[in-house]
Image 1 (cartoon, rainbow, N blue to C red):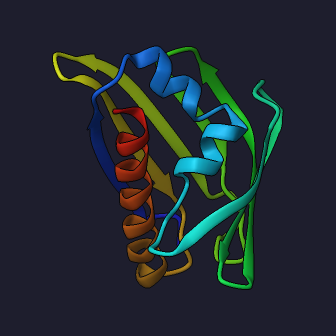
Image 2: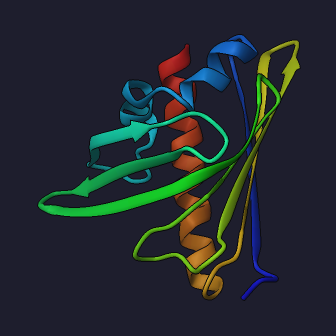
Length: 140
């Protein structure tokens, strides 16, 4: 359903350069791309260039959930856009991250488009919110 979109945002108490770069560094991704309690990221790889690919394996106990995509836009310290594929996503699902400096640090605005249904969108909203919270904890 192309019309299903979610937006989440969070202000991170860190410089915009550090927050932007965290999304492209596989070691950092493995620390904060944790969408739920008790989950881990045993593997994260990035090729941070337009057309480059990334992969993130999230694990919940013994179950591993692969996620992957292609970077569509890399506008340093302003915007990252990438496709988002997983066993729970639909074709052409895309995530856009916009970064802006604030007095408190860096505002990260995340927009994810294309979901199979409202339940999937709502589950992703919870996951992305947890990920932004985790990023904030790792950047402070």
